[in-house]
Length: 234
Image (cartoon, rainbow, N blue to C red):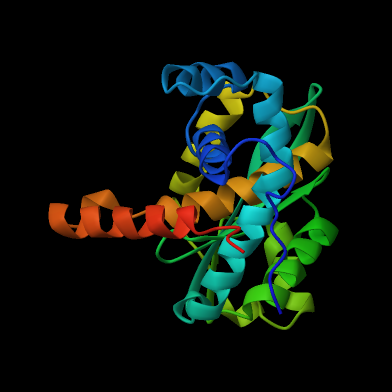
């Protein structure tokens, strides 16, 4: 069965749409920054067009990336790092829960208004439904994690410590940079959508530059770009 063409009906080429979406989500750029960068390359589109493209194609690309990576990521069940970060929506504090594996892959992002046991339980069940139950779950000292893990029968897999969760803390930084460039969020739905799309694209292009030699880094970067350019292909 032929896969439907997601770009059908669009006047711009798939290459331009993919480039615009990648620039906006991957780098800390505003919509108007992306418009200016495309203009320098001879592409005349408005920032509202870029906004429409990322809303339309961002989730499509992210879903395709997740599908490919979940099928090949068996080692992610070894060790997870769980943490929550504060995000303001219209001046109100919300919580973005994130699960990161031992290699820095962002496995799941989940937005809630609270960070109690109920919220932690929903987050854990959602992550484990997609990726299975890991051998070790590293958390901070928030008691909601312990209560939720006890309810699902995984309390013996929890580890806590002052420096053990640095992997999750460091994984927040790229999202924080994007948040500042976007001047924060206005709705929970928008935050959930962007966090999910950003995580998938970050995973694709995250090559752990400091841990690789220059030749290996160039190969990984080229492979990521090749995979990105093939997204949405019929």
